[in-house]
Image 1 (spheres, rainbow, N blue to C red):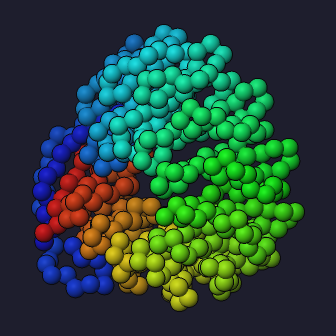
Image 2 (tube, rainbow, N blue to C red; image 1 turned 90 degrees about the vertical axis):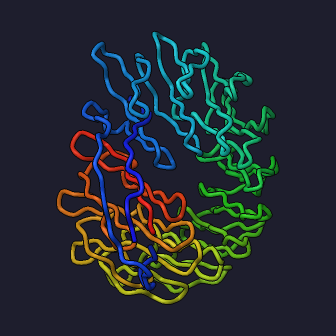
Image 3 (tube, rainbow, N blue to C red; image 1 turned 180 degrees about the vertical axis):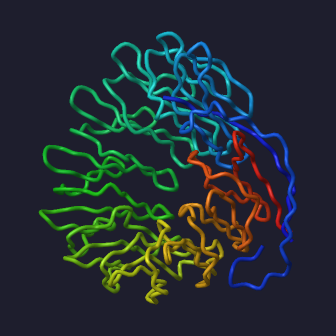
Length: 462
């Protein structure tokens, strides 16, 4: 049975500027509800709204009467500033940070505590470590930039770029420029100079031991792994893929007009193009898959073997048990999902960015468009049709027993859990409103809007 266990109403910071389908259900589903006063969002700057990763907290910005800006965190108004930058939640949702301007100086505010003032702060690069205990951001004093890590200022440069923590939170890497040359700095140690470093790099390996990035020198590009350069290429894709065990690395490269995947230093077959976001390793690090274009045809290549050709394809995904893979494909004007080599039923469109496997690898789910309506396909069974289903809202519970997504019908929005519609809320354009979080596996959370109030809905599946 499904019932409300808690309904709470919270708000946080932001800144300006049941068994799944296809399985027998042991219980019916009964829903009871309650109403309480939510947080007033009538003065919200809409695009400033955010929810924390665990959906327990929300936040937004409002403009005050004296032409100042304030962050509303958990329903409480913070200090007023002359300007505010985009906020960031820590991965554990317990900390938040944002850039704030007072007079002609900027500072980073962490959980309401102001840091040192600087002439400028790159507010879009404020970064928490994966374990949520550390924070880093680029700051500027005079004409010089530097990275501040845990309130300690690093070496000064003419400019800084991408900033990233290692998965174990112990290392920090970023791009820095001196004159016309860029290099990657890892825990304060400078790498070799290049004309430019590709956006989106550097990246760390999953075990935090290796650092890779793409660098330009003259009219050539190299992939640099632990400061060792690959063969120079005419072009390199933005994706650098480490295997989950960190022992292998793959990237896309171009010589002339031909693109190929370089796996552990060995070049694969040449194609017209390689799909963005690929290659991808399987969870056990043993298999590699990527999408390619050859002439008018698109197809995936799995472990060096070409699969069936189609007119278009989507990004492939592996199941957690490594046994299966799936992707969307189009043929003769119809879309379907390919599970291994088996084509599913055809639809007008596959709405999901990619299919989603359950954590136990037993189920596959995705959103489709049929007759102008949208519906969820779970275990090859069709759910109810709606005016809209938010494509990236589809999520399984950690134990794989429940599935949820956010749907819209006429002027109402609601979460759908195991095929059962939850309490209605208003349709809204506020960011983060389509996310449903399971915590623990039998409890789910989502944010709802009714009129000028926001609500956090918490329900327990019994």
